[in-house]
Image (tube, rainbow, N blue to C red; front, side, top):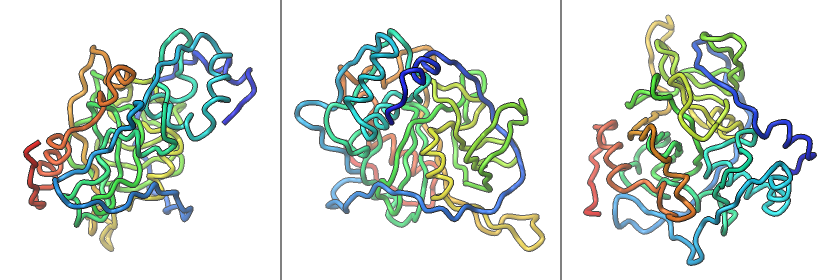
Length: 297
């Protein structure tokens, strides 16, 4: 993770923009992907939340300049720097001089900092599902109800929001170009809506919703999903979908114009936590075949 100081100066204040794309299908990658595993937990309620360390999860750190970022990188190391990007919903080049960010104060485990619960029992019979919360700008991947990965997102800006609903991972491409601007290169692209061009892909994470309706991801997360999620299977004549890809649930409402939840983490470590009602409610709403029992919490 440690880079020469000039690298940080070069990218410290560099802004970029993004869009989405519709392109042709590519053969699946055979590269394996790492998985954050969690052990099965006793079945009590519909979800299992995280236990917070007594000393708190976050501390505040003011970025006074490029040197401060270099020193912070040296202090935290690669694992915690990855967590830092995730909890602040940023990539490296969008960490801005003069701002105060949240820094991981405890565990090296990414799952400790997940806004999503570790276990959702209403998803027990679902082999794989992605959930994308617009409210807290994060995704979670579940296998049979167990959280296996999470990360930050940048969904659609106010003028072009990412529509709420149930999608499926259709087809994918390691690299493609936006139909809005061919100069915008979209890596680790996974199509969600074949008509509208809504997709998951790597692109800038500035710390707020900024896309043209796609779901932007950090590079490592985009590649992980690319290798983990299933593509659709088409009929022999390729005119109909024989088998849907991995389900993707987009839910929640982002409060445009207000302080984002992750900017409150140093004073409220639960500011980005998703409630039982939010998660199980989204599953019940968008996977109606599942009989979801909401807990009393």
